[in-house]
Image 1 (tube, rainbow, N blue to C red):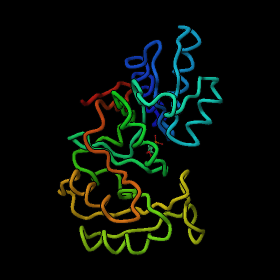
Image 2: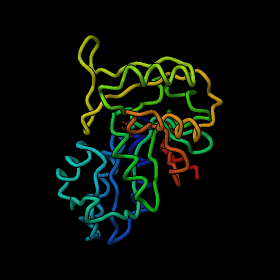
Image 3: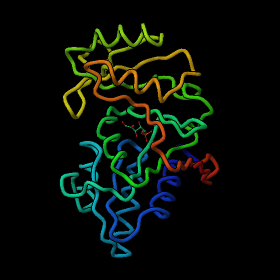
Image 4: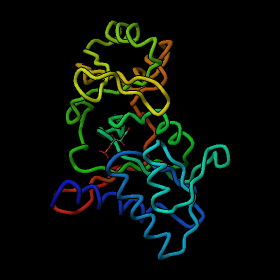
Length: 233
Ligand code: 5RP
């Protein structure tokens, strides 16, 4: 079974278990969410569900439109019933690294407005400690003018190494949906208190958001190589 199939089974399970008629649903970003939106569109069609979808990114918005689902926004739907999103890594305490696709800010806003946040992922994202599986570090969205001092401060505070994200080597920096840059923090200490780290990094002027999602995820589904789905809550 392929990795894509593992993503699909996790996504289908989450949509089938958590989306109900008349729900406001947060739509995450990334390649696994594509299968969730596919399944949601199938259910809307076959079960005649009334569902409004709130996107976490430009990509999510395009997916919602492509599948003819109802597109909503926080202005009119500030309380979301359930958000289904991917993750780059999920540790044993359900702390997440997100933002591999650069959408962490809107993803965290939408998760924070949701009664439930459900993560869908393939088995490679399931880990004991952050950094066991995902080797690209913790994404941090920053205001462009402040990226150098922020880099210096984070390294002074917690060590490690920080890279300004660029799409292609020697190209300019990646610019997020919100016009910001992404720093990828390659941390070396896996035993940090992630709640505290998140709070302290967010206190640095110019930091917009971190890709650390602490105590936000209610349940995670991991599609397995053999086609089953493991869950953690
Ligand atoms: C984007 C994200 C994604 O949810 C995360 O990168 C997982 O993506 P994929 O499902 O493609 O592995 O946080 O900012």
